[in-house]
Length: 238
Image 1: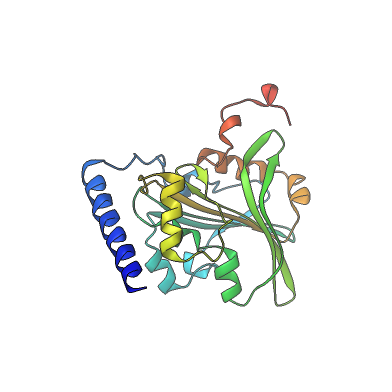
Image 2: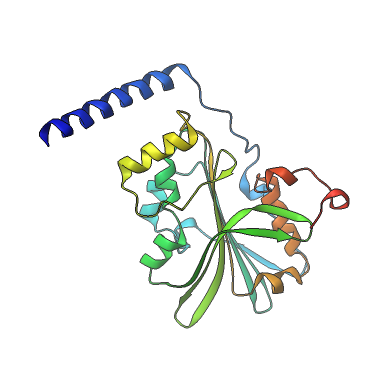
């Protein structure tokens, strides 16, 4: 047993040194976010009241957690129209700023539940289509607290691709090795965590004028599914 542990420790040390050497000579990829999130997401929509909240006011965060997550850019913007509201929460990390596993733990399944919410429903990697716009597959859940519930869609993008949540409960060391297997040695890609939540269903939101502009802002930050990116409604099949 002791010999096995020594072998594992030696392998991890060699891997760590190898990664350090790799990172020293290979620069991280360039970030794709060219504008502040606050300028990309609509600041004004006809018929909607819009308010920016501090990240620490979101169910994901507290002042301490927000500081620890060390975002490069972040936005928590709430849209209100009649009795409907839409919360858009976006966190962004430049290449190499945060580990995939740590940023990936920043989800309603963890943060909302720890803040007293109950997870009522959960679906993994479901299609998300709005009119002719097809976004990357979304994580979906229904979460309730104090007699009200929210429908929540969220995405964790790593280098423009959805991060897998299939390996739930994986130990950190094994998780890191699995990340190497999936992404190779380049573990320094940019990341987005995007959460779209509402007290209305998606079918109801699709009927509301102006909601399409919120969705379009998600396209602008790179959430559109790659196979459909840049296609116009005329040449995109629903």
